[in-house]
Image (cartoon, rainbow, N blue to C red):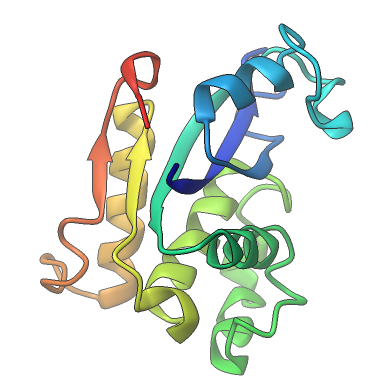
Length: 171
């Protein structure tokens, strides 16, 4: 089974996009059902804002350890040794701090762009980011373009992002 990391946000209008949850699994469809309380063993932290939906799923990790390392680094971007000092400085800029709360979808997407492009530990993997909604895929692509300060993405990044219907997503 392939390993993946995912980003969730609640479906309710009040918290959608403001609250997120980053996790790891080898079966995304089972895991979302667990988070939503349909089956047992969901994370305790996700009981409060049910129901949840996927924002994205990152696939292509070569090992379970690499996927778990990615998950931890994404959850703890300011504490992670995977982030270089330069990236940490960029994340501390005022423009970055103005973008929602620490758990907002946009902030998590910004962190993801840095992880996929500036962290040697993760940028070497052939990871694919699958989005549930086209709007989030477009935000992510724009963030990547801003990071490279150009209209076209480098060849090794261009195939990183795709839009999928998560309800037909099978690993």
